[in-house]
Length: 124
Image (tube, rainbow, N blue to C red; front, side, top):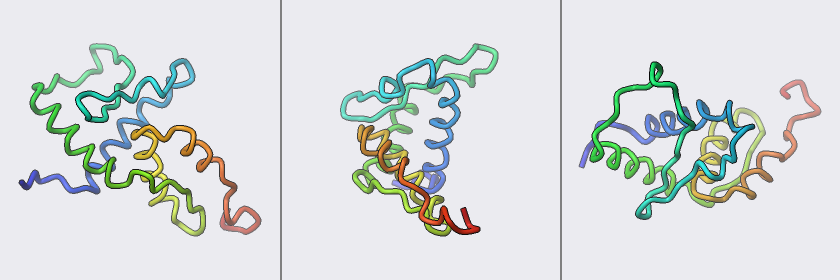
């Protein structure tokens, strides 16, 4: 079934949701924000004041969104690793975030703490 949403669009959208919620992570445990519901991985964002909320989606549309998002999350599962050579962060950081969402918290943190491959060059 074609949905009109590409995997790249879904990637950008899911990561945007996650990044938008990271500013308050210092006060909350981010591991508690990743939920599993009937085998679907869902990201539960922090509460948003009512004046800033978008209208609620119908439940069936919300479920359909998370089904599509899970397709992308599961596609990249276990592909943990940050390649900091050249412009590879543009590919590896989204993949790493998908692995965080799939529950590989500690492995993702270790990967993100990898030193920059070009730290001693003018590219760093």
